[in-house]
Image (cartoon, rainbow, N blue to C red; front, side, top):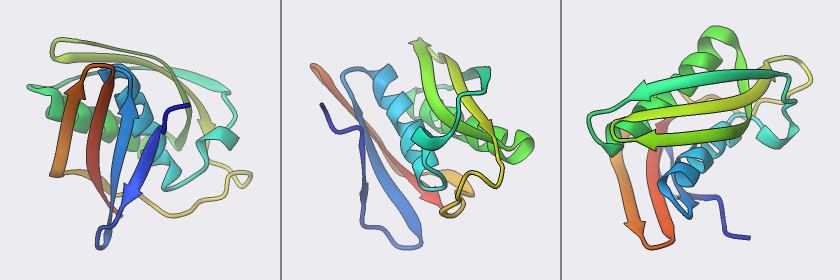
Length: 138
């Protein structure tokens, strides 16, 4: 199985690369990677399903807005991500269906992601492999 994401050395922040066979899979794995800084997505129960629609003027803005929307759901609704069930990108729009659960004592927290940054953000597309890189303010 292809590596989903990895963390790279960075000071006071977390720098991550997420991988996929296409842009949609890489964006999905970026969301899982970001949540893995705070919780263990595979241990979160898929009790609630949510739909997300975001737009961005380019692919970097779309990645930024997608990840920021997930942080907003965590901060406003206490929503923890379990899985990205479906994600589609058409032009400047992203539509996703995600599952997860509310924050509770049964989920152990590893810390907090305050924000996504544009610092060192990168999206590299090659045939059959897409890598997205993001830095998170912790």
